[in-house]
Amino acid sequence: MIPMVDLQRQYKLLKTDIDAAIQDVLGSTQFILGPNVAELEKEIAAYHGIPHAVGVASGTDALLLSLRACGIGPGDEVITTPFTFIATAEVISLLSAIPVFVDIQPETFNINPSKLEEKITGKTKAVIPVHLFGHPADMDPIVKIARKYNIKIIEDCAQAFGATYNGKKVGTIGDCGCFSFFPSKNLAGYGDGGMIITRNEDLAAKVRLLRNHGSAIKYHHSTLGYNSRLDEIQAAIVRVKMKKIEEFNDRRRINADLYRKFIKRNDVLLPVEMSDCKHVYHQFTIRSKNRDSIINTLKTNNISSAVYYPVPLHKQDVFVRQNISGHNLINSEICAGEVLSLPMFPELEKEEIQYISNVINHAS
Image (cartoon, rainbow, N blue to C red; front, top):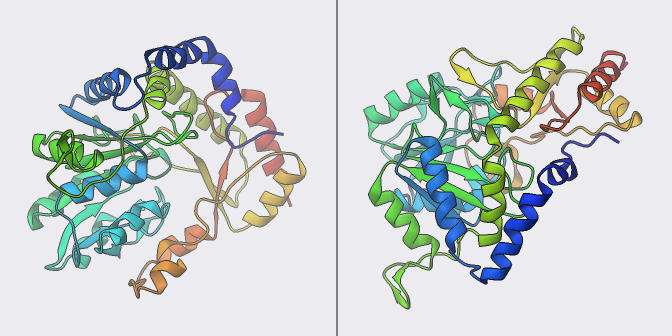
């Protein structure tokens, strides 16, 4: 069986260092906001050339705390894409703000900046572009519009650690960049974890307060916060993998090129990489009107595949009940009916990619 992601292969590669890192944490008995969290924050800030990084409990919390730190609250409108994992819009509603959906560019699956301005109202306070599947969103026009209307930009980088746009790493372009260390991500732990990066000292201070029950001094609470601290063991694991992130992303890019070389079907659209962008291929996502047939053939040949995402957010029951607008989102709806993600991870072998591609080429 060829899985979507094989965590065992990477663990075996890094086993000695990961096991030692975990044992060091166990020996220190510093489990909450310990030295590994502090060092990982420094390392990720340095990697991005940015002054502040704050570890939190998950990628979802990274988005939630960023919104809170930016002052988003009841009745505010936050623009984002309907073609993403629900966490991106979920956190908006959890703050009693209103998600406003803008359609995607079908080539990259990312929010279409040319559709953004028409959705801005006097209540619009932020936009969350998602760098979906590892390809950067088109940030320059988004930044231009955000500055024009004085709205915050919170980048959802959960699937795009290390991706670049016009030479800038994603997460460094807006007010905040939000990352996930979920086990399948490009940079991953062995549980939940997340990180927020920002150039803004005030935003960083607010996030640090919010992640720790609204407390800067023990047992003194200046605001209502959350229990959203990055776990020390997860931080230790991510620090080991951080040393390999460029190598791992390069392997994903090589594997993507191999898929492009071997897949030869006129009814399959391959993922693109726009000029001046570096795609890091969290997913290798194709499109086909014959998706179901390809899925069944892959399954018959013991090859995993996945549909990310079969139901756009504006069609999810939770948002339908809230009467969240779903107008003019046709590209999101079309892509949801055609996308198919293939196995993608750094340790995937050339022979496996060739086998997967041959199965796709001969699927009915």
